[in-house]
Every structure is written in structure tokens, then in C-alpha cells.
Image (tube, rainbow, N blue to C red):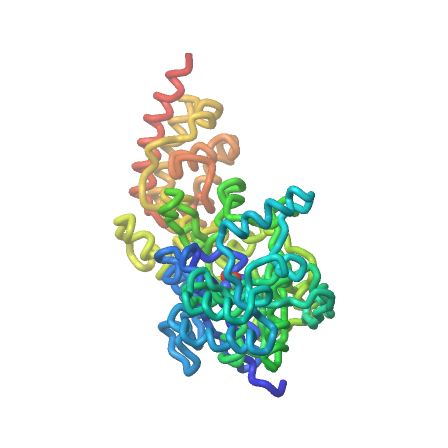
Length: 511
Ligand code: GLU
């Protein structure tokens, strides 16, 4: 590759980063890393009306959490800054004026009322949602229809003056996209987009191409929804005599049903997060769930996301970060939408936790336990991790699924107790207590207790589930004797005694 790879992730701070945006950031990041390139974060905040407080910080915190920190960007340094478009405001006007001078753009002076009237008059003729374009611009008030002196006076008064692109009436604009090959748009279907607003702020379209050019962006990797804007962008590149970057439009991420684009409402509807981190929406007064708070491992989440629209060319699914960088290529990005399957995300997380080293899990689990004010030894935590890590899907499950390691149960699975317990079992449980007391080690305890049950022709399937309920509260958890061994025989015996008393109460209440 001759040109240095420089790619950018260019979100608008209009809200939290959607999971589709995270995938876009990830693909840009991987492509940069793979090619010794540079990954840039650019904040596209020219539309002040849609600006949301806290959104930029949210975006940066999310990228940092995911280990996708940019090489250049606001707060990250770099020689092509500023990286926030609102701080580059002065820079854009000259290019809009250059486009006017070249006959590729023009001034327009129409008031909102006039625009409204135009739409209504077309509607009366049966044309719905008429656009400002090569068909309608000749009927409007702009520098193409007014005299030079009239236009100059209006420009000087700077009232409702904007600059629009002058899209040709009957041509084609073609460009090549790495995912979609050759793409062609008919200019007759493209409107005369506003590129500079009355307050001197550029719109997305102008700011985006000027910055991609000035920041020497080699590849534009972004969502499919920007495909049609690309025709306008290519028109401007050509008019300004600049080379276009290479385009890569990523497929949509679809709802779990496979029908339609995944939206933020789907999170609530299907009960999974669509944002990397929790987001408090002040306007809607809603707290949106985050993958982070749900207990996702960042590498598991990235592994899930990388396969939404790309594959390594074989069936390999578990891809470490290094492996993703090694294998990532643009040719294997697919065109068709990728279905968001949350069960798959869970499967990745579970697999990652299972294959994590205990040392890596230790800080996560021990800080979770400290938060719950649980004080146990380092050795206890290590053994706890070994016993539980096969059984959890999310980090918080260590605690929610394994709380009985630290606290004696206060509630029991009543249905099971009523079904299984009979007071005449007590004598045998008392023997089990002394068996547990007489040996140490999980295997030894298991052998002793099972030996006793066998010798007395008592059913394992009758006694062991009840023993488990006394220790854990319900029919859950890893190997019972490993649990007993870790919590210690004294604690186990207390639980059995407490369990027997409670079981008697539970069963005597049967009416
Ligand atoms: N600011 C656009 C967005 O919010 C960026 C699109 C692009 O990457 O060009 O997604």
C-alpha cells in the first residue's frame, strides 16, 4: 500500500455511541493496526442543535474501556488537529466559496416560509416531498435566479444566506466501494445539499470531506447509511480537484428477528444492551443498559462485534485481539445485513471467562466481593474462581450465582424441600454431619458420605439434593463436596443443622 493508512471514526456527539458505531470504530481500529496505520477520532459536532451534553465524553470513555483508544483525536494528541469540527469552523468557508467560484455551488436566500410554500405548491400538483434540486432551484431565490447585484446585496445583509451544492441535472456520479464494488447515482435523484449555513457553520457534508482531505484520510470506513451522501462527497472532491479516499460502507446491523435495522428501542424490547456503557438519557429520563455494567469482557464483546459483517474466511470464531488484527481485511466484509444475536454475544462472553486465567479473573472477582463487603482470603477467592468460572456468563454472575460460598442461605427452594424431605431422614443427616467432621478434603468427604448412603441402602438421589439445598439454598452450584470443603466443615455443619430445622418447618406447614 503506497499511501499511509490513516482512518477515522467520526461520530457526532448527538447521544451515546450505539453498538453499530462501536463496530465501525473497531473495523477502523483493526484496519489501522493491521497496516501500521493511524486511527483517528474526529468529533463531528457542526450541528449544534443536535449536540448532547456528555456524549463526547461517553464516546471517549467507551473507546478507552474497549481498548480502542485512538492514536489521534481530541485529548489524544496528533498533528492534524483540532479534531473537533466546531473548533475548525473558520476553515470551511473558503472551500464553500471555492465551490461557488467554480460554478459547483451557489448562494440561496429562501426563507423557511418560502421553502414551505414551494413544497406545498408541488404537493398540490401531486409531487410529494419535493426537494431543492436541479428541477426546483430555478423557481427559488438564489444566486442562479437573481441578478448579480441583488445577490451581492443579500449576501452582504447576511440574512438567511446559505450555500448549496449545484448538482448537475442529468449526469451520473460513480465511485468504487471496497464492499460494494462500483456504485452509481443519478444526479437527477440527488438534492442540492446545503454545505454552509447562515451562521458560517458547515454542514456535515462539507466538514466531512474537507477534514478527510486535510487529515489525509486514506480509507473512509463507515455505516451503509452514508452511501448516498457519498455521491455528494465525490462531487465535491472532483470539483475541488482532490483525490477521493477509498470507500468502505459497512452492512447494517439487523434486529434479532433479522427484519430491519437494530435501534436503541430494541434494547428495551428484547432485553439486551445496545450501548457499550450505561447511558442516562436526560431528555427521555431513561437509563439505558450497557454491556460494561452487564458484565461483559471487552475482548469477548469485540470478538462478537467483529463477526457482525466480517469473517476470517473460515469457521474460526474465537479470535483474540491480536488474531483479529492479524486476520482483518476489507475484502471479507460482507454486503448483507448482520443479525444481532444476543445469545451469541453471551456465548462469547461465557467462552472468554472460561478460558481466562484465574490470575486475570482475580482482580475482577476480588473487587466485586470487596464491594459487597465480603472479606475472604486470597486463596479462598482463587478456589472460588476455579469452581465457578465454568458456570458464569457475566462477571456479576460470580456473585449472584455463587453467593452461598459467602453467606449461609436464608431461603430454600421450598418446592424441592416439600417434594423430597421427610423427618425420618434426620438421623441419617446427623450421621452425615459426623462423617463430614471426621475427614478433610472434598474427595474424602464425598467418599465417606456416599459410602454411608450405600452401606445403608439409602438413595443418593434422595439425600444429596437435600444436602445441596441446605448448603446452597437451591439445586445449583458446582460440585457439592468442593463447596463444603471450601466453606469448611464447621460452616457446612451449621448449615445442615439450620437446614434441618427449616425443612421441618417448611414441611409441617403443608396443609
Ligand atoms: N458524523 C457521521 C456520523 O455521525 C460520520 C459519518 C462518516 O463517517 O462520514 O456517523
